[in-house]
Image (cartoon, rainbow, N blue to C red):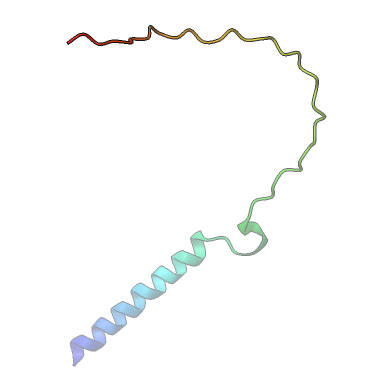
Length: 66
């Protein structure tokens, strides 16, 4: 029965180490979420649109020779 108690003690030590690491690396409280920057609304400016030429298309093959 001595091996079981040693295993239980080592398991408790490992569990305590994992729990301590979790609390160390995970922020808790108001520091957990970063502050979002204030949103600034910029009025839209009028942009002159220039007509765009249609894209050049390749040749159309109507019949395929055998």
